[in-house]
Length: 122
Image 1: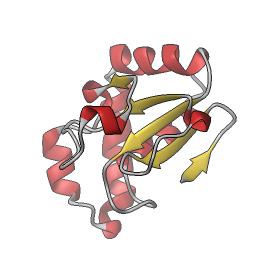
Image 2: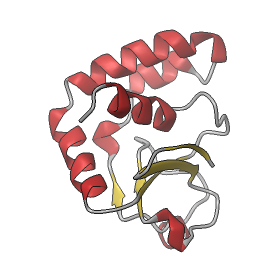
Image 3: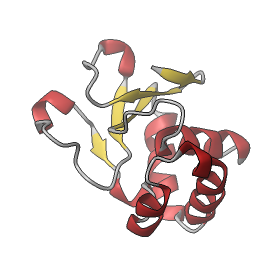
């Protein structure tokens, strides 16, 4: 697990679900490889909050591209009012865990999303 706030944390979707997760929200555009929906135990799959396919492919999980990825992703999020509002509605109802499939726990869209929400004080 990484990056916690009082109501939101992030976790790889492949880690077992726990009661401490609260509502699990998948924030990837593509369903995680090899994972059944039952095992993922997600309340909501919010595809529209994930980075665009073009941005995801450009980033390619290259840590050297992380600062620029965050900038570009935040710009996409700024135009995604409906998806951000939908996520905020889940968060305001209780503890929420944003789940993602990436292997890199320090450079992934869920972390960038939590940072975006904190920076923009939604």
